[in-house]
Image (cartoon, rainbow, N blue to C red; front, top):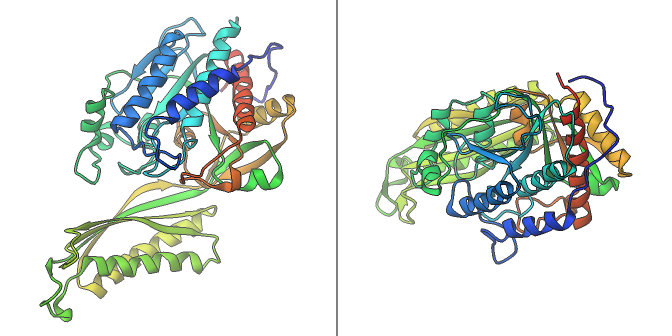
Length: 423
């Protein structure tokens, strides 16, 4: 990306009322009793949310394409060229955690829609690049593993067939789930992405603590994720002697403790967790025959992360030996710590400053689709504050004025990018 950050004098004006109306329409789909969301990837609810957003975009003249893994690309056609013209990408995801918040992901999609529509209404001339709003598939990874599947396929990290073969806890594949909601397409995304800018809530407390309105995200923590399968032998929990049990859940328990100890050894600089167990047959009086355990580790230091992975894999085998079972660890996510495009970060900071908004530079601990896109084009992120840093929780909240500020910054950045060449 060039360091030239000159922006045309005119600037688009996002429609705040349109933003809140669309956001509330989307937030109502999959809403929980406590005001959060249960809208898993490729579920009926996520399909309905996609339908609402796609209809909104189509009504305003965006041309929609859906690729085989369900990513939706809505091109504005600014450059007046064909599908191969250079394109700026903006957007996020609509899937949620089982009891997640309504801002995570959906804010970035709705904000991108309204920012892009502000550019459409400004009727810009002399654009060098087109603009596309994107809905990425399965960012959360709550239903299909690994996370960030859709953006990972587009960025070349995963093969299409690999992503479509991913199964949920009931054995349904992503392919089948997308077909059921009508989002297993045959189109393709822009072949020449010039830049990607993703708008998102921070999901942490730093912006609120520092009193900053806009976060300029300079890079990401590294993340490694594993699915470990322990294979034991089903047996009656009553008459089966303890010494003869081959308890897969016991092995999982050992590994959970070992996973936490990896972080404790670093004084918390390494983050580690086990967030999910799939237990079979999952009966109160049957020794667990099979357990799938989902573990992750995060750090800013890639060497620390690789050492943690080696130690974790050793702990897997130790846990299996202790319980007398078999173990198969698979690393499903290998995302080193890295940095976003420096010149694009500068554009974000200058746009915020131009709007009179205070900024703070920071790194994202959570994974986002923009991290995947960095493999294919210059990428960066705009954060807005999360109240008390709460996320992946029904209590997740961001103030309306902060939501609007983020959309204004995004629109300003996109306005500059569609007029300026990037490399």
